[in-house]
Amino acid sequence: MQSSNRWGIAAAGILLQMALGAVYAWSVFQKALTRQFHWSASDVTLTFTICISVLGISSFFGGLWNNRVGPRTVALTGGFLYGLGVFLASFSADRLWWLYISYGVIGGIGLGFSYIVPVAVLVKWFPDRRGLITGIAVGGFGAGALVTAPLANRLIQSIGIMQTFAWLGIGFLVITMATGFVMQNPPAGWKPAGWKPSASQASQRAKSDYTLGGALKTWQWWALWLLLFLNSCAGISIISQEAPIFQELTKASAAVAAGMVGIVAIGNAFGRVFWAWVSDAITRRWTFVVMFVLQVALFWLLPSLTSVAIVTAISFVILMCYGGGFGTMPAFAADYFGSKNVGPIYGLMLTAWGAASAFGPLLIANLRQASGSYGGGLHVIGGIMAVSTLFPLFVSPPKARAQ
Image 1 (cartoon, rainbow, N blue to C red):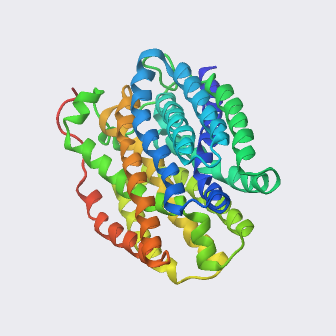
Image 2: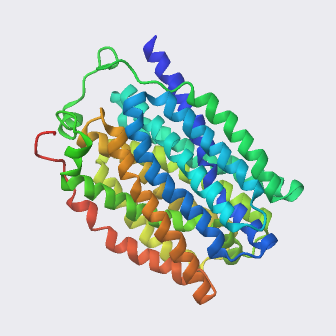
């Protein structure tokens, strides 16, 4: 009964993450906002930066709160705030500061609270498929833009940007509240009947559970934070500017670019599952090495391309690598520090995502504004990834006893 119950909880977690992942369709809103209100691309991009930065911080507090009151309360609170924030953004006409507060701060807090819940819950329900299930869990987040980007584009064209925020906010509120209600932890010490970790799994896992304070005393926690930050910087710079980048490189229309955003979002979602599955076979750190090397080549190549199909394919793989970081890292953290306190331990690690959102999007937006094209910024990011390739080679499991 409990074995089938965990798959129902997993399905609800995926749907919850899909609603939250609509934030990745921001570039569709950006084009409409800059055109209607004559705000600069950098000013509008700051909304996305604030939202993801707040997400990174609030996910830590959501992880702590989850340990105290349980996942359902945290998920419901987060879902309510997220839907409310998007809805309130519909009142931001000619008031950029209100967009920052509503979509950025309120929506970002809701995102962080809700995002950490399926990760923390499902890693406990699936000790036998730790890498794969965390990849599937956050894969829904990556798939959110697949649905939202074309839907939002159609709504913007038919009812306008402000009404689009209102209707999407209501929809997100309904979905997140319904799925958040399903979130619950398994009984203490639960594991699938007859399952025991293999020798290779046991060698990569902590012998006991670390507390948050104990994990922070290890250099490995900080190393994992750095890996997540570097990988996130690359992908989120593309995500924040997807539609404008696609239009500049390929001269495509806004509708075609929105469709490209939706297709590329599949890469974000698929990469979370694919690379998490790969990491179970080749280890987490070698997975990061492969993803970094791929991104060096792809970021350097992208500015020279003009074909819609090829630009979409290259961006698809870049977003696979971006999603792969989020699919792999929860299992990485659970391997090194145990699953009991993975909520706050990985929740605090997500501040790397917030920090990356403050660096990557603004870097590429400012370089675009200074040079008049995205090419230079994409090459700079490729250089950053080249240096980053060295770091995962030195990561190894903690040797000290858990604290």
